[in-house]
Length: 223
Ligand SMILES: C[S@@+](CC[C@H](N)C(=O)[O-])C[C@H]1O[C@@H](n2cnc3c(N)ncnc32)[C@H](O)[C@@H]1O
Image (cartoon, rainbow, N blue to C red):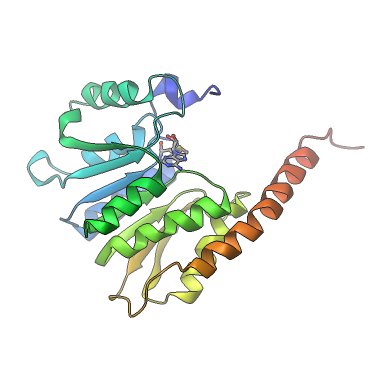
C-alpha cells in the first residue's frame, strides 16, 4: 500500500477549478435521484458533493470502493465525514470492486441521477466502469476524472463510448473532469463485450506508453 497525501490531509484529489465546476453542475442540474461515487480516496470530494446540497434536500449517496487505497481507508472516510458535520450512517458504503458492485446494482435494477467515476485508470477497468452509464437516468450526469491527461487509459475508453453511444453527450469539462449527460434511453445495451475486449487489447500498450512518457519526462533536461 503506497503513501497517499489524501490519507493525511483528507482533501479531495481534484483541483479547485474542477471542484468549482462540479459544484456548479450539481447546483444547476438539481438532481434528486440517488448519487454515486466510484472511488472515493479519503472522501474529500464526497464531503464536498454532500455539502453542495442543503441538509433537507440532500439526495442519498452510495460509495463504491475496495477501501484498500491506504490503511484504515473506510474509517478515515467516516472520520472525514464527521469532521464536516455529515453522518457516515447516511452514506451507503459498498466495500468491494466496482465490477462486483456493478453486477449486483444492475441485477437489482438500480438507477442513479448522478455519478462520479474515479477508480482504476487502466483502460480495461475504465471500460468496465463505463457500464455504470447504463444505470444513469435520462437527464442525469456522470463525471469522470483524469480525462484528457497523460492517463490515456481514461481518455481512450471514454472517447470510444461517447463516439458510439450518442445517447450520452458532453455536458462540460473543467481541467481533467469531464461531465457527460444522458439525453435519452438506450435502444441497445452500452459497453458491449466487444468494447471490453478492445480495451483489454489496448490496455498493455497504453500502460507501456504512459510509463515510457514518465521515464522520458523524468530525464534531466538540456542533455
Ligand atoms: C483516485 S482515488 C479517488 C479520488 C476521489 N474521487 C477524490 O476526488 O478525492 C481512486 C479510488 O478508487 C478506488 N479503486 C481503485 N480501483 C477500484 C476498483 N476496481 N473498484 C473500486 N474502487 C477502486 C481506490 O481504493 C481509491 O480510493
